[in-house]
View (cartoon, rainbow, N blue to C red):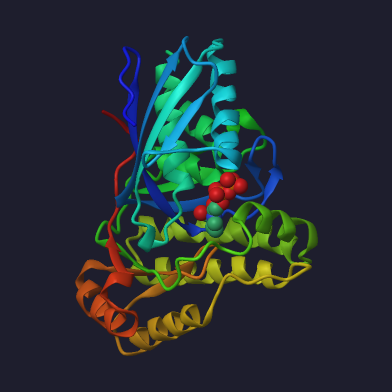
Length: 328
Ligand code: 2P0
């Protein structure tokens, strides 16, 4: 379905991959995290969303990839539009048409690009002209990681303490622009426990959660200094460590849970083997079994060939740094 309307606004936002992970909220309603996080926005994967507010509508109409949306997904978009309407002081229902250019096979989260694009399109369609900091705060209300997708390249989500001071900022004078992320899609199935549920369980039941909060502070400082110094080895080492520290929170929750499968472990071992053979690369893993390999442009060919042999060509996708949110 394509919406055409006088006040229709279309925005594009790219997805991001966290190198220092967000795992846990101190305020679930406002989505204020316990820690800061740091990500890289990726170029290939994005969501394009068109929003128009229309007085002839009796409810919000939402479609994703030309399919009408209902149930929980509709509710989540509707709840977000309620926030936009309240801020804009309007009561009109909306048409929302969204297209995900995130290959399902890539196994990359689409909620970050989805809510970043929705925040940009809906706020502008409601005649609010938000700056990027305000947009980041708004996107955060839809999904925490979405606040980072407002910006391109390396981005830090400054945790803050409340709505007005919890938002993402781009990293100034970034280096490491030859960085590449190779996504290995070892599994396409829905994850057994959503990140929203998983992080809530870790916060309330993992005895290691207070230590996580402390360690992220130093991981963030160290990775920012590695980016500043153009030090890929330190950058990759901290990213890999931080991802494993996050997954230790799933194993130490009660009940425990695990996002890895057998292929995840095979991929991790292969990354280590490559590294020991002189091809420098590191892994990071989010709330699912797929592995993202962090490397530099010069090693992309060897690494993609290695993993294509292991898992098949179609499971290997190469991404590079991408831009922030844009209007069409
Ligand atoms: C991240 N993840 O920093 C972490 C690492 C998954 C693992 O942000 O509840 O979908 O909507 O705020 O943003 C995924 O969590 O969670 C996520 P909500 P979100 O990218």
